[in-house]
Length: 264
Image 1: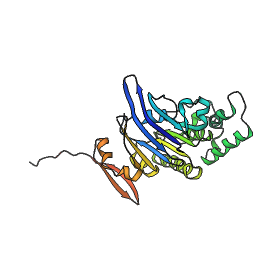
Image 2: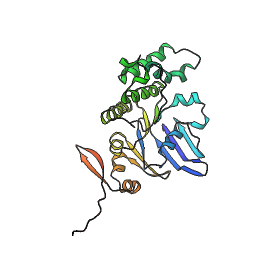
Image 3: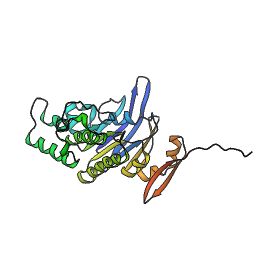
Image 4: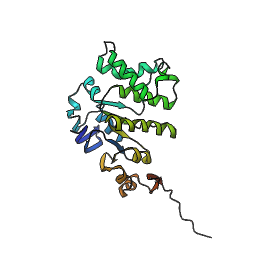
């Protein structure tokens, strides 16, 4: 059974088609990254997978169950979302924010159980946030905040996590740290990740599978190395790209167009 299955999925906003006729099946323990130029429909697609948008046609299923048939609590048991711009309220401790991921399990009007607290403690430890547990969320750096938002998603204990540009605003070291954390969750816990990334080099290095969208349509789907080295990639980004092998890793380099200047 696929962790995530899209069947002829289309999403509209009024008369505008944002995603058109996308069919996709993602197996358990797979990292699938959605790439494409601005306006390709990447955020719309992952928001629809997470249940924040309703498709105008087709369906989304998580672990065999249609998302449209789930209520909010049922959906929170199956898929967690790390949005591009999460709302992080000041005045809340890191521990309390991360523990919000357990609300779907113990209910809004019931206190967390000992089991809920163990899950929170385990996630804080895995993401190196134990020393931050009593810190006000407003005092965190960008990298610490992103780890905290990811921790909240992981405390939901879902087997599917959806992330929309999770490394936006982070410096290079924090980008790598966060992506390495996610990769370890895939390897050690069998997590299925559906993410969007603008950075093609990092997308190719961390994902098992890449899906290229353009104009809301899926134009390429395959192993990361195959998609990164495809002719279609440059065509749909509308620019020259060069892929360089650096110690066995593909690095995508944009090639500047230099106008030819005639000699005097």
